[in-house]
Length: 433
Image 1 (cartoon, rainbow, N blue to C red):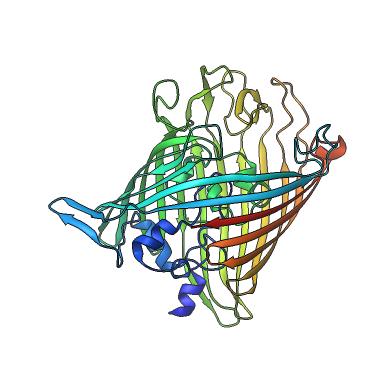
Image 2 (spheres, rainbow, N blue to C red):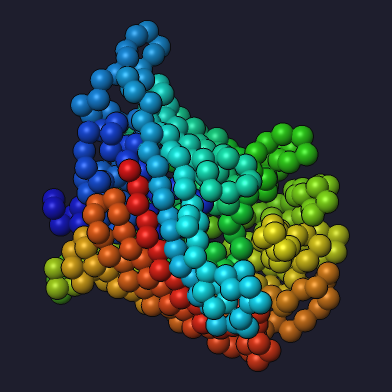
């Protein structure tokens, strides 16, 4: 049983800035430590952690509850905080004022300082809330309200959700391939995940219908590309997101037992998104992805293997693809800057625990086409944009981690010097309490 838990452990991956970290709110509610739910580096979940997530965050341990007719809530509202402080450096032309960009080095303290609440609010309903206090944008970064029931061996859930950055797949996801941004296994998420390179993150509001059993899961969502639903933002949930995944376990004579996750993602339909003036414009919401991950052990140490492929099709003047556009100066997606070629990538990666639950090293390679550098829809070459990435994670404590990442980019895109160069290094301290 212990080996089974170890092999199934690496399901949900490493959280990035402005996204849901493995939060101590749930440790307080259940009365168990972080490693009871997690393995390797946070927030990779074992079987118990996955079961807790699938149940809608409702499991209660030693914490007292208030129970009455049609009422079941913890005695305390379980809160936690997450601090992320980083130093990032790229090798582009130096800034006139040092630290304006990452060229030459930039401190980000904090680059995230989030307040979390989560847990049980009824016998079959839970919630998850994230508010980022370190930005000038909306305080609510992410929220979901899962209702879950057990029926004939299936866990069936209805999950309303909203997120400012994590995309339509935020409703429910198990993989750490980058299928959802806060599930990416390494800090440099666009370098190690094809889905993230293809642009499938971003603001999203919707409702996910999810069916889960021990063989896999299906997530069918209706959503819109905005961080919340109201007039002028997500007015209609007319886009569709489908996730189908198989989660078998295989036992090999030579390499022991491995937990697999193999799946496909499809984003389809059209919707409306805000442009830089705040007006709603018609956009398509189209992308497709395939991914596979395998979790097992080599020399009695945890190891995870990843492969992803994704594509977001080109847009047009009448209907730009919101996944395949460039950002404006403030970092917001700009539908007027649509690309005229498909944006696509293939990635392969590995993450190995040199010291179990303490020190982890990883590597990844990306082969990609960037879709062209648009400038108000001026056609350009679909340049190659490849990358090699090295990662290290050190667990200072169960809830404190140090991450180091180093990426080298190459391809025809870099025949013309890019503003941030072609080398990017980051050091991140992450703590949750």
